[in-house]
Length: 287
Image 1 (cartoon, rainbow, N blue to C red):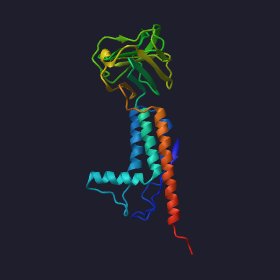
Image 2 (tube, one colour):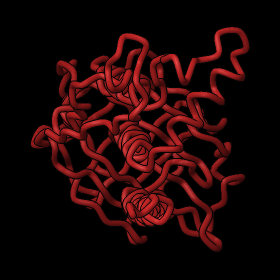
Image 3 (cartoon, helix red, strand yellow):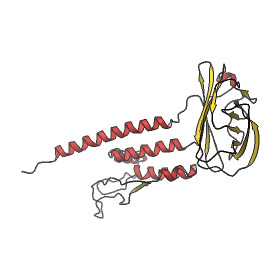
Image 4 (cartoon, rainbow, N blue to C red):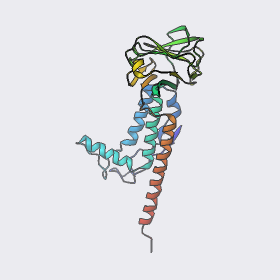
């Protein structure tokens, strides 16, 4: 549990209190958020960001009440005047991006091939809706839709089925499977199948375990595989999501998020130190 006490503005409120900000610490339960369903995570993050962006009205700093644009400008100005708020808001947003999809499958054209990469982890899963044995393979049919990805194609695997709330959206128009050659390039410790309205995971899968791997369709293009560029998402009945990206994705990788946060933290620290030095220089020296 991380507790970050909000900066006090130093402006007295109408009732004589030192600041209109709450005295209670701002609590951001990152560890608990990581193991909660997606809807609960997003609700908590929304509440966190609301506390950061919205400051209460006081006599010296009233909140505009008529023009919505003026209200947004007012709240943004208040937040940007506080480097700690900026940093915590960015952490909240980054965490939201990372946690928004439990499993992400990316299809990209690389040279003369199509490369599929997948990564993610499920903190929770809905109730099991069935059991199936399938031959492991790397195949895709964008119009069904269906995706088979495995690091050990050709062998048999036992899977538990988990339902989506509705059919996964199609990401192309091909209704027959396009298979990557068994002798092609592939890797991955965890196999999975996405088929219409169900996700298949190995019966040995443990919650929290990493799912990752890749497969290459040699000599193929998006056009030949009938893949339509875009981002497509389906939600399991417990709120966890699976996202398929065809083409460049706007979802940041965890490493990129971490590097961005370090850079922004450095900038925020620099601004904070500069302001403190400027404040000391502006303070009159007693005679």
